[in-house]
Image 1: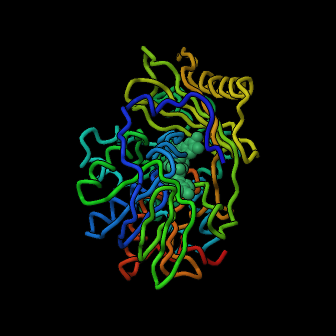
Image 2 (image 1 turned 90 degrees about the vertical axis):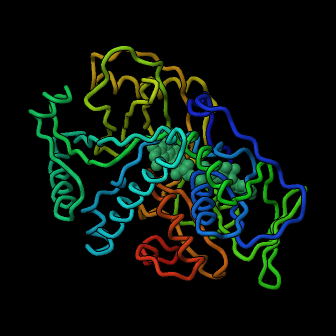
Length: 399
Ligand SMILES: Cc1cc2nc3c(=O)[nH]c(=O)nc-3n(C[C@H](O)[C@H](O)[C@H](O)COP(=O)(O)OP(=O)(O)OC[C@H]3O[C@@H](n4cnc5c(N)ncnc54)[C@H](O)[C@@H]3O)c2cc1C
């Protein structure tokens, strides 16, 4: 499955780091398949805890969906807390949101260990009511977040116009969110993880896996890994291996503008909205605007230049409607597939049949936050420790 198509921005921002391919038969305790955000965070966490870990990647590190990622990090999910409360009950819904809020803090702490912090910057998120009827929804969500001690503020139409220059609606501001350059973040984490003992092999596609005598033999073209535990961090390609079926793949569009010279918007906050699918915007470290949205119910990318241009121009038009003072042009544009689970919760945890197999799959708009939470959950499960969030995201959760 092709994960994206177009002219990507993040890979232009940092020189790639090369790792060897696997060309020997090696032994380890834990093998992780896939070196995107999920695989690198699992590898880092396990190496930090002193485990012997090997990370194996079919292509280049950080060049899967993680490099198409627009890098908005938020504790709020695509599904609002009050909606989760209706579906999961208050205890589990709040626990799930706490998991994401805690993961935000962990991402920040990790960024502080990196030489350039993966361009991580703490930001607020402005969550706009897309239409007047959605204001009720937004107020309900604000109340649910506030009652459960999440950092949030309500912005009425007057304040929204005065402070942000946005007219005719209301918004909610969630705090302690962040922006990141996902490509740079992964590469910087990889160097830190290697220092902690992680072995990384690129250009080494896993072709076959056998299990005998309680050990996995993971075969690539020129080598093999013998491992006691196996973690799948294969992203949206997960279905090649697993029985995970309660998800769907859609297509989404994104762009990065040329650097802008004038003002952008207050505090360079992340912007998104209540409509589904939603439009979203953020700034980059070099003063570009990244926009995303225009999702389509298609399970593959398009290589039509015309379609890409049409959809990204629609995104730019939405920006201009919001901020007429911003004049800019598209410099990078891409489309990508995007995985979501039916219940809005990622798939993280132990295989239902084989206790030595684990999954950390970045399904959902909040994929990076889920990958971070997943790395801690999987490390705890591997160590036989309890984890208070594991039952919510587990593969055998009750839907
Ligand atoms: C356009 C777009 C915008 C997004 N925006 C955001 C955002 O703003 N914030 C956010 O948090 N999330 C966002 N996401 C989601 C985010 O990108 C994903 O959650 C994240 O990339 C998933 O990381 P991953 O490591 O699970 O997958 P990937 O990055 O795809 O990594 C999986 C890796 O596994 C490798 N692999 C697969 N099969 C094998 C095999 N057989 N052998 C060896 N290796 C294998 C692949 O080559 C790949 O490199 C966005 C996604 C898209 C597409």
